[in-house]
Structure formats: C-alpha cells, structure tokens
Length: 315
Image 1 (spheres, helix red, strand yellow):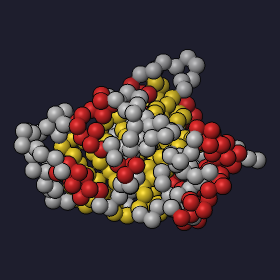
Image 2: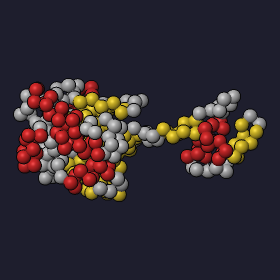
Image 3: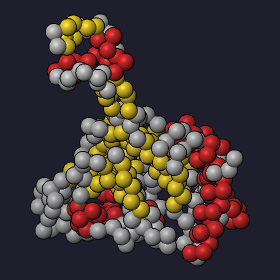
Image 4: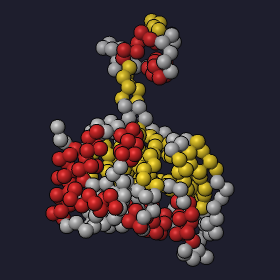
C-alpha cells in the first residue's frame, strides 16, 4: 500500500516521499535538502506533511513551489501552529507580477491540538490568507483508502509525528462449490454493518447473512509512521507508544549516537538506543532509523545505526 522513499542522503537534511498503490500522486514528509528529489515528484505531490519548520526540515519548500507553480492543482500543506504564516511569508518573498490566478492553490492545515486544526487557503497573485475554517478532527488528511493521523511531540517547539493508515478491507473466501454474484456484495455490506439477519439468496436458497459470516475476513490496513525531531523524554515516549503501537513500519529520528546523549538532551533530540528502545516497546514490526547529525562521518552513522538496532532487536 505505502511505499516510502528516503529522498535525502545521510549527509543532507530530511525528506521522505510516500507513494501509494493505485494513486497518481505522491505524499511528502518534510522538505529538507534532498538531491534525489526530482521535479516530476515535486509536481505530483498532493500533500506535504511538515513536522516543524527548523531550516533542515523546511528549506527545500521553495523547490516544491518552483515546480508546482502552473500545475493548477490544490496542494495540501499540514503542519504545526504558525505554518500558515510561514508558508505565506516564504511565498510572498518573491515577485509574482506574471503569475495568473489558478496557477496553484495551497490549502494550509494548521494543527491546533490533538483533535482540531484550522484551514486557510493561499492563492496567487496576492497570496492573502482566506478566512480560516476550524475542524474538530483527529485525522489531518483523508483519501478514499487511507487517512493520516498525527501526534504533537515536544522538540522545544511543537513537532508533529504522522501516522499513515490504510483502511481495513473486507474480503470473502468462497466456500467450495459456490459461485460469486451480487449476493457477495450484499453479504459484505451486512458483515460491515454487523447485520446478521439480512436474507440473502444464493443459487435459489435463502440464507441469513449471519450464517455466512464465516466466509468473511478482515484484512487490517497497513500503518506507517513518521516520527521526526523530538526530545527523549517520558511524555514524548508515552505519546509515541500510544499512537504508533503495533505499526507495520515506522521511520524515526536518531540524531545522535549514544555517547553524544548530552547533546540530545541539550537540543531536544532523541539518540540511537533510545529511539530503538521506544520502537521495541511500541511493538513496531519494522523500524527504520533516519535523520542523523551532519557532524557524523559515514562510519559513525553506521555505528549509530548499530546502536539503534541493538536496542530494537534486544531480547
């Protein structure tokens, strides 16, 4: 369902591109410097999920803007409080005398707390913020077959972690000798509505839907998390375990090696073994360490990853 590509190299900033099966568009998490990010990938990005706007997470927004102008699309940008002003200020720092209305539209979704966000739109050529609309909703983004939830973490500023979750799918395993037909759709709906009394006709025989539920199977939707900058503190760890427990895949920041833990504390970051431990305690099936300090050499990054894996895979 979700195919995550890390577009930034270890010595660059941070940018992840999420491609979804049977979708024409991409979805991006943070937009730091990323040499592997192509122009077409920028153009085809439908929504951008920003953790926070420290420069290494937001510096490449201008590249996205440059390639998206002229597509005529509505692009969603999600992020913490203040993101609407910051996007507007970045855009208005340029001259737009030749831009036409409808060249692009940005819909900014600014997360206010764990269950609400506001939406404003920015449109050329004036880029004024339209009247804000508030929503009480714990999902910041929804498509037909997946949604994106969020969790606010502490990085001495609000840093948003995102959870991409595919919808559960109801499937049927036909009993040998049975043929499909419109009754399959009827049974599926009855199962999803938990209605065991619906009368369903199959090849001339009438059955109560509940008697056929044994053929139904629920396939749980894939869950992929992206957890970027956060302090290695109990409050953040409790939130992570609550939100990302049992995820199929999580990408988590490991900015510092264990021996540089004091820098992690000072700069409100996590460090290798702690990120690995939290992923283990959250029962994450596959955890991938990302976003390392640029001060590390290639061999030091390898050591950092080893520290993470030792904690994650420990007995």
